[in-house]
Length: 204
Image 1 (tube, rainbow, N blue to C red):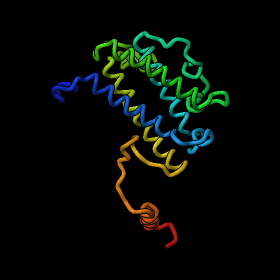
Image 2 (cartoon, rainbow, N blue to C red):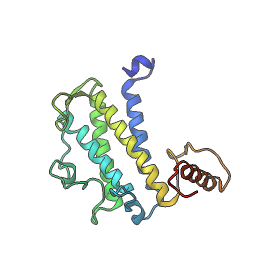
Image 3 (spheres, one colour):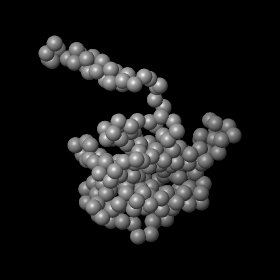
Image 4 (spheres, helix red, strand yellow):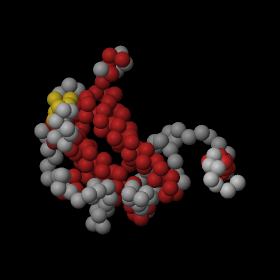
């Protein structure tokens, strides 16, 4: 248990804090962008910032709802097993940024109710996992969702940098070195030189 390795720290409070950090990082990456830029697909599989927020809502809706027999009321089709492929990874034309963010806010509130109501060793069942591992506890689900959301926050880091060059781990803490203007361009060029020199098949 985390509380055994970190004396004086309430385990559920600590896990909830890390969950909230991932949630806020994802939402922060939307700040200051146009409707087009929050929807722009910037990988071959279509990864985009608003889609990552929508996906996070689906993740929390199911893991903190269905797993603990607290199904979210009227879940959207894209969050169910009947959904079309990747339909949780982008906003449809009729879904505004405001509606996606507001829906995630509702889901977060519902998830927080589950977290508050249950002890960390409360049992749950993940029906979409294999039979051998589907019996879980709230602790396991919290850890799983924290890992997934922080992974997607990392995706959002890269996508946002591709959109407008903005970088940073979270609002108020970029976690980036303080360097002079132009330093990153030189750094990028140097890394390209190193990469090119490492491949003898490339022209010198």
